[in-house]
Image (cartoon, rainbow, N blue to C red; front, side, top):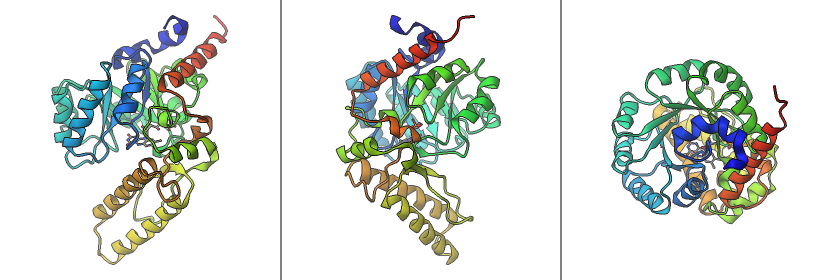
Length: 339
Ligand SMILES: Cc1cc2nc3c(=O)[nH]c(=O)nc-3n(C[C@H](O)[C@H](O)[C@H](O)COP(=O)(O)O)c2cc1C
């Protein structure tokens, strides 16, 4: 660790909060962030996060136990707020003494933050705006992630650099704020740490780690892709709000537009209620991501990836990726002019 003096000093608050060596989270990636990748990240000094996604409480129970068998280091569990069994999943986390729960996919429902804390875990929430960030902290969130639209997966409308400027100067001195979206190298980590971030969260950069169970064809698609191939999905019908998803362009991204048109038609014909329509859209993504990650169907599946995908060029062990990021961060900080 001594080789990373400057970085470690700026990461100290975040690393202490996470219980890791480095304040680098590997953001939860559905189907990708399971026992192997999560334990590899945490064993390498970063902070792995299990993606619960649509798992049942029984499946999450087994995944946490299996991860704990592979690492004694801290890791988190990412729960989607609209999961119909959210509170059962929170109980499963408490049963295993999970130390950190990340709530993703919208404003946490009433009682969920309290339930997590009662179970002894710290709560990390996504803050899409400064006002919501403040509200989440008032409601008990222990730390925030701000994620820009460069990220892979479901995204908001604002870039990481703008969110960082809007939120870090106000909140980062007194609160733990982690920055995510578009980070592929340590120089960017250095920049956000200097702006006051407690640490960073990366997804795309870790998706093709040697320990990632993603299908070899999924990984090859990442190695071939450049930033401009990772495009945000387009909302087709103004009445059917869909959260944009950033993924590599393929037949699947085109099929998503067709799916929206079909669902909108069913809503028109009153064959489908709006909430059900939105659920169908969400399930579409979960199924499509599974097809790409697990089955290797890179034509029709969803290759969720952020714009940093161009910086993912080969399979490397998680420990090497983290060591590179830290070395780049340290080198960047070392070139700064001393006061
Ligand atoms: C393949 C993939 C799947 C993802 N799945 C989830 C998820 O299930 N839940 C979640 O909160 N974020 C998910 N994300 C977002 C990541 O956790 C992380 O915040 C994001 O990748 C950071 O931006 P980056 O991709 O630019 O590094 C996913 C990202 C990718 C690339």
